[in-house]
Amino acid sequence: MILDRYLVRQFSPIFFIATAMFVMLLGLIELFANLWRYLQYEVAAADIFRVSLYYVPKSLSYALPISLLFAAAYTLGDFYGKNELTSIFSSGVPFWRFSISLLVIGFSASCFSFFFDDLVVIPTLRMKNELSRALLHQQRTENNSDIVIKAEGGKLVYSVDFYDFVEEALNGLSIVELDEDGRFVSLIRSPQAFWNGEHWNLSGAVIYEYEGEMLAVRPMTGTERYREEPGAFRRNAVEAEELPVRDAGLLIKDLRGAGLPFTEALADYYHRFSFPAVSLVVMLLSISMGGRFKKNILLMSLLASLVSAVVYYVMEMISMMMAKLGYIPPFAGAWFPVLSFVFIGFLLLRNAKT
Image (tube, rainbow, N blue to C red; front, side, top):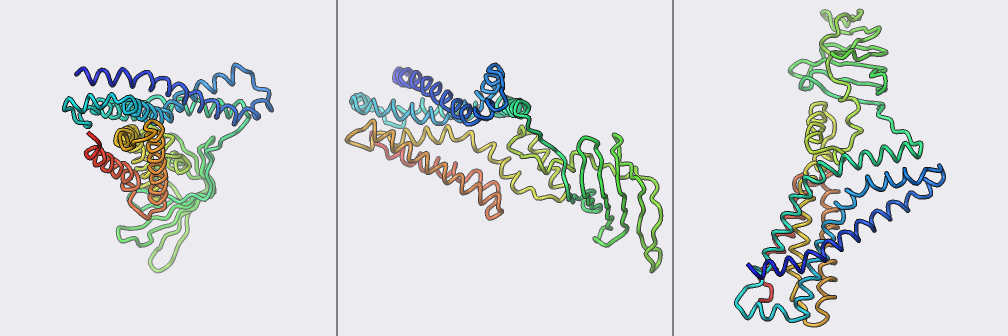
């Protein structure tokens, strides 16, 4: 349709210019926030440029919804300000039909954002963080202390004083074995255990178990049963939001199986699917706010869209916090703001001036 092509032609240059500006702004904010650290360690300009380059995909991910919001509000506000929509309405084209091309762009941007974040943003952000830590001489350890996990459906309970990531060793290991009814069967204690690629080798292990009415202790032999992989003892230090979707799902599975808290990770996992929908939400807000003002149309459309977006982000922040604390289900925490604003947006769009 001619009107669709015309709207997209007016929208596109504003969107690309806004995206470039916001990406550059976010990159500069990140650069100047850490510039004093780079100067302190006399980091070369080429290395600083590499760090900034790795941050570009993340900046683009943040800038995409803001750019869509700005471009849609500006384009429609400009149309209203120049009375171009009067001719369109006079021809019998309803406003919702005229705005469909923008909704398609918003939906496409949401789909793009999901795959872009998973395939590009997370790997490059990890590379940026690793390079930045190396340049600033920051060390990150994956060692854990005071770990308790469950295995074999809760029949085995591991308690570890300290997990050494480099050596793949468990220090101060205790393993409690329970029966189907949760009753005590045995206790194994070992000062240290090493992973041999297939199972744990327990050093100087002893086992406590009942022999009749007496609790007996004897040296432990045969440790092939204990095959809980080393990753289970360190993954509770990994954030789900730092992993691709597939790995985040495996993390949650590990946490469930180990009997560790997984609500926060599950909320972040659902948020990975709901966050890309922000592009569609802000597009709906921009479109539905257009034409609701009679004076200073362009300025008021931009302001109203921005205020609505801020309200959305605040609601999302609160719902995610409540989900991570367990007050509401993780799925509701991630999707409630999206579904609420999509409903409000379509309702406003249906009643928009036409």
